[in-house]
Picture 1 (cartoon, rainbow, N blue to C red):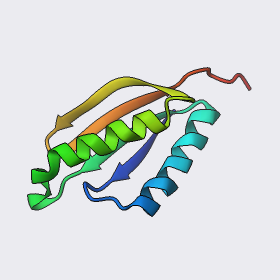
Picture 2 (picture 1 turned 90 degrees about the horizontal axis):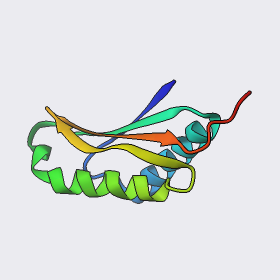
Picture 3 (picture 1 turned 45 degrees about the horizontal axis):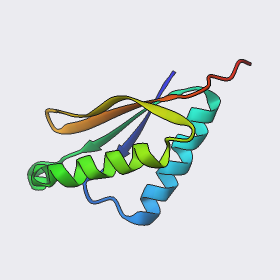
Picture 4 (picture 1 turned 30 degrees about the horizontal axis):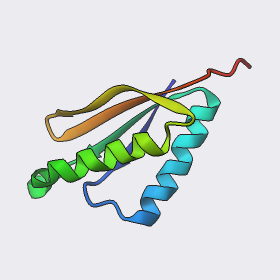
Length: 90
């Protein structure tokens, strides 16, 4: 199962930590996480900021998950895939 987490290019610290906790839970359940930064209008100018945000997100989750695909820009969204390291069997 793939769970999506959406960021804006200027996501503040509190929202980031909130979404990070959700991603941790998803990975621990054995779900893949698809995190993406959605650029609206002129915010596409902050491409580097979005990439930094996603790489930091992957780094913060490296204990429970590994990056399947590095940040890639597709149209107006930059996406990263993270898979759980050890899939738990239920």
